Image 1 (cartoon, rainbow, N blue to C red):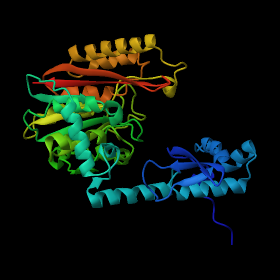
Image 2 (image 1 turned 180 degrees about the horizontal axis):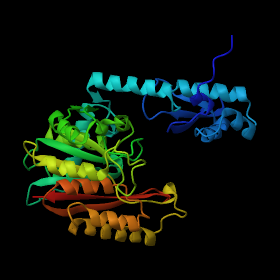
Image 3 (image 1 turned 30 degrees about the vertical axis):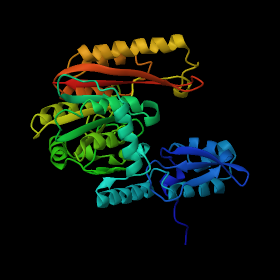
Image 4 (image 1 turned 90 degrees about the vertical axis):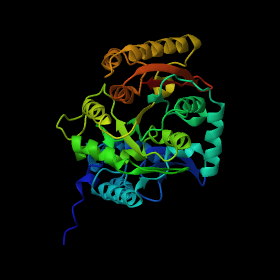
Amino acid sequence: MSAPATPDHLQRPHIRPFQPLAGNQQGQQVVALRNPVPMTEQMLVIPAQVFPLLGLFQGERSLEEISEQTKAPLEFLQQLVQRLDESGLLWGPTSERFEQQVLERVAAAGHFPIGASAMAGKDAAEAKTNLERALGEAEDPELDSPVTGLVVPSMAYGQAAGSYAMAWKSIASGPKPARVVIIGSNLSGLGDGVVMSRHGFETPLGVVRPDAAAIDSLVARLGDRLLKDELDFFTDATVQSQLPWMQSVLGDVPVVAALLPNPLNPLLSDDGARVSHAEFCSALTDLVGEWSGRTLIVASGDLSHVGAQFGDPAPIDEQHQDAIEKRDRELLALFIRGDRGGKELIEALRQDNAQRWMIAGALTAMRAACEGGLELLDYRQVTDDKRQMLVSHAVLACCE
């Protein structure tokens, strides 16, 4: 009896995105491979010297070809890809089965587990204390008109708590919305179209429920393709970073969460299987006026990403930092005075996005669906001690 044929996804392995974590086990340098989607309970740990092999697993070369190229024994490579597959780290039927199991667990719970919202605190008491302190210390923008839309950073609270607090404090005394639409940027997920889900989100302050009626209306307009790649919410911080602030200021308000692609990049395949940025903006703009009650639309994300950490060749000196701020403010001014669809901003970024604005999709979607004037409330830059990284962010309000 002949041995069963090796499945093609093991014969030509294609590794999925993962997060490498360097470590030491019994004096040996190792790398733990963290799957952004919690498919298995334990992370796969491999010797550090084996790690470079993973870069060759792109679905193009066979194990025999990789063995010949690297001189790694074929049997060793077969054992390695088997372990990767068992951990859900290879594209193929095993990871698809794991994904389905994760989706079933989320559906059974009715919400995604705590993610980036854990920044608020280890439990409800600590989160409440931290958020209330930041809100109490934040400057009140004292806006003259009710807010219909906000632009809020999505970076770590430790770097931008004052900006988060200022943004959310601006709506504290205004009319309470019936729902909050949080539009994030799909920076690390797999979907290249707009991603939504019918599920809510758990935070240290409790569960944020979804606005089922509003989400259903978007799905009715755009189809179930909106719900593809919803596991991208596991890798996202842009939506979940806003939720504790929303809970602290507004209490129990349902949410409509969407992750948008970068409008500067076309869909990988224009076959209608994914929802484009333009389609989503059009549908959201139409439906916001049909939903009952007030809607607050929040664009979550940061502006420039500059420095060696993002591939730039040199540290950031003061002159460069000033130039970054100048360009940021030019783009913000263009956005504030531009059309509701943000077409002028998108065109400007198409011409020059050397500073890597990541928020363009969320920003322009918020502007398309919000009537009223825009006001810049805050602008800040965050750098590391060695000036290898600079990320800027802004707080804007759209007022009636």
